Length: 231
Image (cartoon, rainbow, N blue to C red):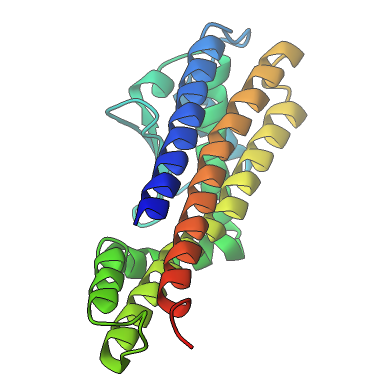
């Protein structure tokens, strides 16, 4: 178990460092005010209109960095610090979330796959580790039949969460690429504002990368605990 706690601590530390860096980047670029004077909400509405998307609403949601696109009700949800703000950070986030709306409208396959995984992961992710624990307690590592299959079931649940994290990567990177391309091609931002938007989105993407690596490392660790003890 000591190895697991070390792994967990290392993942938590890297995640904390990246998250703090992301917050500092967004705070810094929130001071780079847009010359076009548009708010995050206005940026989002224009990007949707430019892509011919008329059935998606742009709404405000409480909190910081709580921005997301909801494919179920077709809403681009922008946090209070993005919806009404007129800076490089707001432009980047608003355009990124609209990137997901564009993915949805164009039936982007990775987004479709992630959406299909959501109901499965929401049920299994919270219990997967406990199921693996239970299997090990029942003798999985020693090769005892029932305990082994319980642990395997837990690993499959854990694997679904890892798959979700990995599938999320191309979805997030593609949304950022769409956002940056639109900001640049439509001359929505100056070169300085574009650099700020690009840097902010790079750090946002790294949070998903760290999460995916952490999920994969955890899966491998518990897989070794279950299979490593068998002859």
